[in-house]
Length: 255
Length: 336
Image 1 (tube, helix red, strand yellow):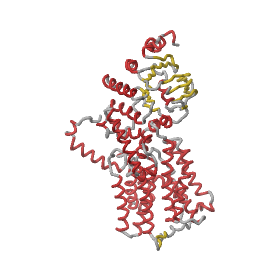
Image 2 (tube, each protein chain N blue to C red):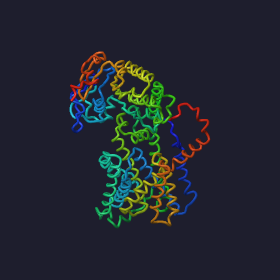
Image 3 (cartoon, each protein chain N blue to C red):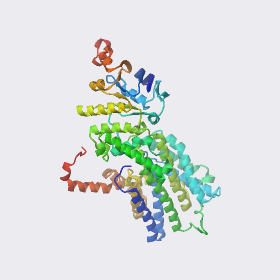
């Protein structure tokens, strides 16, 4: 398994956001995490990427424990994410956004930077070429010099994805990658995600568009009130009575 | 690195270097040399303060690290018998070393809390200079009789630093080194990451930037250059007083930097040059000087918050709008 959550819990004061969650993500799959509003999906993402500390349990990535590490170290180990709201460096250019995200593969040594050694310039040039290639593959080549904050929504979404890919993380965590997109734009993004899976990436995503989730994911985990209520293929999930109850609500079971 | 609008770094640095040479060519008057020397020293301070502000942190104790460099150098030379030239390297390193634990504590917080912690450090250190180790630091009457920079032995002869002119050249050389390093960093990956941290530190962190370590590095390097300015200050003024490193000179540094424009590496240059000249012209006002600064700061913040350095761009854009309002309408991908 690429990623393993072992009995993970998170409390915010009196609120139990995630309770004893165990799940695994297999390599080279698209894994969906779904559930009604407030089910704890975003909290799980924040725990996975070190943005929030766990209350208990542990998270293991490629056989090594990553819970308790700083977000930057977790990214270094190969987990990168997008945020629910399109989160970018809005004042920087599109290309600079990707260059910042290429941080881990770029030259940062102090003295070579000052002197501008040949090795330093070669490295910077190759990072820049890589970033431009990435922008081209996501249809952003034409806007590379624009300020990220001035882009239309679709392009901002695509840029978020480009930045995550620029980190070269094996596990890509996407918080609502299709939110606010038109049907055509959604279809394009889903094609990109499938292509990424074919290239060997593993994708874990939260998404509210159920049709997209069912069409895209290999495995789906369903959360409700911070508890895992089901896991399986899209077909299993659609037939699961607990899931239907959580989504449609059964009055007698909810206090 | 992608192209950024504004002055090219090499051109800007070249202009500064030439302007620095031009001063003693144009005048040997000791008053003008004094003003120009002070300006170069203030430039080292504002450039390094802006360097720290580029990660979004306003360090109100910046001038304290100048003080550490100044007092450390004075003591190394007068008490330990060091050469000025050894102290010129060692004393800024002392400032940088002190910056490590101070930064580790202060950088746990950001925004107003960071401002307050560094402000507290400024006051604590000023009181320390004033009240502690009076035998060594001179206490309230100040630390006096600090020698001029020692003669610099150079192939056969030696350059003495007793006159105004050699001191100007020394400060000019120190300024060139500081400016070269800080401008170079701004236009490298360091500047790019600093701007990322200033805009959204959490996003930078999740993209693999060790934000705390990065901020600490910036803090330590900024303090080193403040220390360099401090060494020069100690040996050119030859007297140190705790109030030299108190709130008022610190506020002036912030005013210089912010009025010029803290977003750009050229902002502190513009701010320091313009305000140093203004301050000489306003000499008559003396006690009201700080009042005038306050008023100017408010006006600048209200009218162009990105500082004087943003003026050319604003004027160009305004002209473009008037000229090209028709032509622009067909442009593709016009930002909303």
